[in-house]
Length: 268
Ligand code: PEP
Ligand code: MN
Image 1 (cartoon, rainbow, N blue to C red):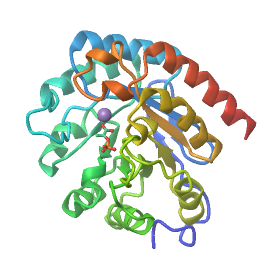
Image 2: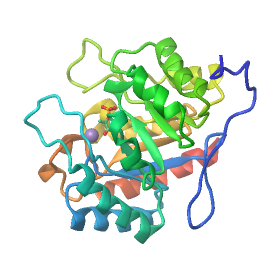
Image 3: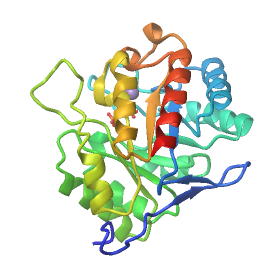
């Protein structure tokens, strides 16, 4: 299999061009992706981008098309939000990541977005995976809500098989019998994926826990377990967030976490 260590014994490094030189993901580089769950407004997103850049985050996240459980919840600003994201990218020089839910949005997102995210709910959307496999664009592939490691690896295989080997795995917790944590983090999946595959693995402690107080401990556990980085939700006023406020860190708490994970990674 193309995802396997047998196929490629060396860690794959995914290079993202930025004005300050390429950003490397994988092979021991620590990548910190941060930003709000969704792009909510121009003012708040541009302010957040500036804050996160100054704090050292490597990639700016922001949902434009949100997969919401209820059709009546805030679904994101869509293409209007993309203009705001483009402005933040231009202003800070940070690469940006957003979720793609529909193959029809590839052309829209391709120019501006540096990493296309496949959300948990779409991990087995094979039509989408095949289309992303035809692109020359990094893809962050989140683990399905109830996907086995094998299913997750094979989902990545769809993208690699199309010719795009720039795939980044992202563990975001799986659904178990436990409702108190939003999902259950599979820490063991990190070293396992690193053994089975040459591709980078990140962890999203925000969606994996659903509670901001658990985000930092789980982020640190992930880095200690060998993750190539983390993706964290940050919001200026989490209680007012249009989505996922309960699991969002304030910029102040993100700054503390950032310093701690950098220190941890240096120990490795
Ligand atoms: C997200 O990261 O914005 C998201 C919706 O996460 P997940 O697909 O893991 O639920
Ligand atoms: Mn979210």
